[in-house]
Image 1 (tube, rainbow, N blue to C red):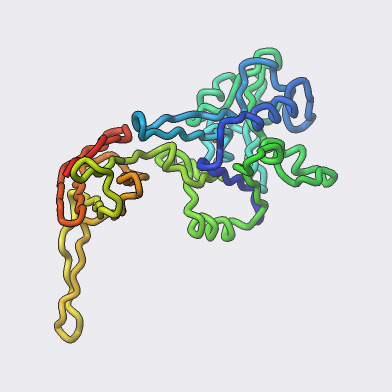
Image 2 (image 1 turned 45 degrees about the horizontal axis):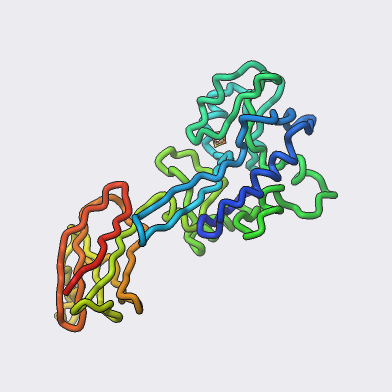
Length: 293
Ligand code: SF4
């Protein structure tokens, strides 16, 4: 059966917060019977643009992560709710406004921290993926207010079969945020590594000048030379420790992104001048400055 999905491209978000404002415009002081009570004027961030800075001057970048209810297939809030939270057949997770009355405890059941307490209405509240609009045939945009307003088209909504989404996940390299939670969200991210992982970057100098065209190899500490024998007895060998290679640009710089924590070996070959060092990534991106050869 078709489900609603949202795909968010972290690389495109510039923190303009138009999505946040559209959400306020849609829900503050507006009652959507059967969907949600009005959002309070202050305190709630049903969509929250989180920020993460990586690296150090002058090799630094900033990533923004629009975070909202992940519309989990295995939703901890649904489990905690005992009927106060339910998942519609189209994948949208809803809060039952009668059964959830007074259930402040549900706010803490969400591991993403995207459920909020409405003191006046005595209700837990969260993003409902603009279900009231998606259900409305006269709403011609067929998407959420946040996706509709975003000038960079950071967010897209899809109403498709799960098999189609599985294919899209593979084809476009989509990921879920905090997969270790096992919540199976219907919100997926593109370029998530810019927010969740780290990079190693440096410049290569040869005799004091920026060196364009140096080959830089990043190796893991595991792996090595692995060979297989063909039927004719010919050995086919490959170095399985190589994770990636880069060529330095006009400014002599290179960057390896999307790295997990761990120890790496960095090798530079600048026209025969060589360098090798061990680099450890530990929750921080690394600007190694200049490698002088
Ligand atoms: Fe529930 Fe939080 Fe998952 Fe949304 S992100 S479905 S509020 S557990």
